[in-house]
Length: 286
Image 1 (cartoon, rainbow, N blue to C red):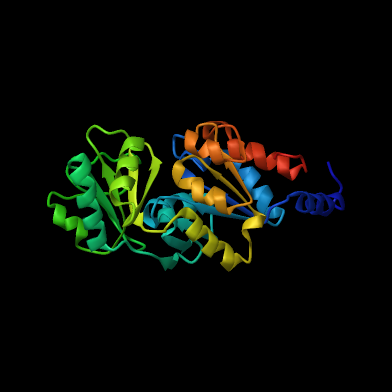
Image 2: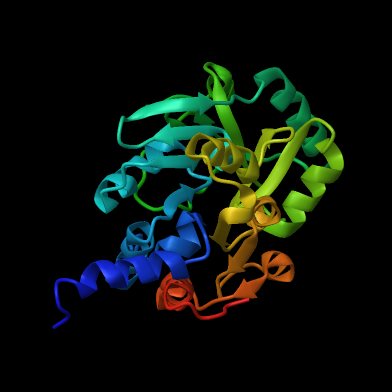
């Protein structure tokens, strides 16, 4: 057993060894395992990092209503970036600090241009706000598991209240092909990201995870040079470009691996913990 005097010394050594002030983690395919839980090992590694003086920020494509239950389970009380950067959410105070909406008229124009090129799309939208519902149109297949959503039969209902983003699916094109076609058709009006299997999203032009992360980091007094980020999908590319170092999971999309500073183990094999544990020991990772 270490002596009482050695515990503060060990904590001080860990703080001195850990080279970042901010750890930014995506959720699906990164922090979460396939059963939508966070492993004990990863929880312990993140706790050790915060004990060493760094902040942990979750940066996810999920809007707040699809994220809040995970934050509550983690006992997470800090700032989270949700909705691909559209929402900066204070989990401890249960309030939105910032929220950016997608112009619905512009979104309609963009979708018309895309459908002119690829044919009819199946749509869903994420409504703005702490209690914003996800409305799912005819033919759209939910990929996120048991999360709250409401089916609508009249497509005009999708546009009846402010939204953060539009989800699009095509009956034949795969995710990469659909995202590429959508950018080619409407890239000057909106941004298009591929955020996961079956999840291609239409966003306000210029909005990325880096947008929300930079806002959150500014509130914490932390800079990009102090940040390490973990992710698995192409929508994490701007976050990797902003952070000092970006780490892709072994299960990550090849586009993200191509720009990552390193690749760790998969989300199922505690890839985040693998890197953080080494950093806490003062070992070189990059």
